[in-house]
Length: 184
Length: 166
Image (cartoon, rainbow over all chains, first blue to last red; front, side):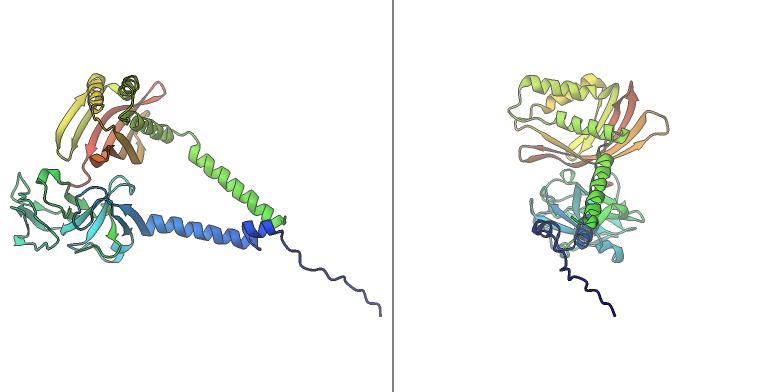
C-alpha cells in the first residue's frame, strides 16, 4: 500500500500591522465596527439626545449651560403628564425648547396674578420661585387646549409675561422627557 | 493581504465614494441650503470687522432678496414689524451692524419644499443669533418663500413662525 505524506503547513499568520489595524479576522472586525457605528448613530439620533441648556427660562430647575439628555422613547408608552419637563422641536432637533407641561389636552387654562388655574382650580407649583404676577391670556377669559395640545411654560416666571416664550405645543412637536425624570 | 480583506477595503471605499457623492452632488436643495448658509455668514460679523467688509455684507444680504421682498418679524419682546423692499432690508441689516459685540447667526434644520409652480420653493428653518455671550433671540423658526430668476434663487418673503401657539 502506497502512502503519501502531506507536508505539515502551519496556519498562515496575518502580519502584525494588519492585526493592529483590523484584528485577526478583518470580516468580524468590519461587522463589529458597522454594528457599533449603527448603534451609536441610532442611539444618539433616536433614543438619547444630548442637549445643553441655553438661556434662563428653566431656572432654577435647569440653569444656563447645564448638560442634559432627552429620552426620545419616553413618550411612546407614557403620554405627557402635567409637571413633566419636555423638549419641544423647532424645525428639527438641533435646537429644542425645554418647558414644563402645565395643561393637558382639552383643559381650560388662565393665569391670574401669577396663579395658574386649570378648569378653574388653582395649580400647585412648588418649583416656582418669586413668580411675577402674570395675567394670561390678555384678550379672552381663558385658553382652551386643543385635542392634542399641551400648555408648556418654563419654570422661570420672574420676568414679564411677554418676555417669556410659552404656549401650546402639539403632541407631534414633543421630543421626549429629560432623562432622569426631570425635577418636579 | 487576504482576498476577503481586499474585498472589504474595496467595499468600504465604494461606500465612502457613494456617501461623498450623495453629500456633495449639487442639487437644487443643496443650492438653496448653501444660499441660506451664505446669508447667515453675511448677517454675522466680528466686532473688529472693517466698515468696507460690513457694507459688502449688507449689500450681499439685500441682493439675496427680490426687489419687492417682504419680511415679517415678530419675536419675544419685539412687536410685529414688516419690512418691504431691498432698501428697507438694507436699512435693517445696517442697523444690526450697530451691535458693538458683533453678531453670530447660525441656521439649523432647513427643510426645503418645492412649489407646484416651477421655480418656487418654501424653506422652513431655525435660526439663532448671539451677540457676544448674549443671545440676541431664542431659537426662532422662519418660513421663507423663494423664487428662481435667471437660474438663481431669491427670497420673496420671510416671516417668523411661532413654535408655541400663544
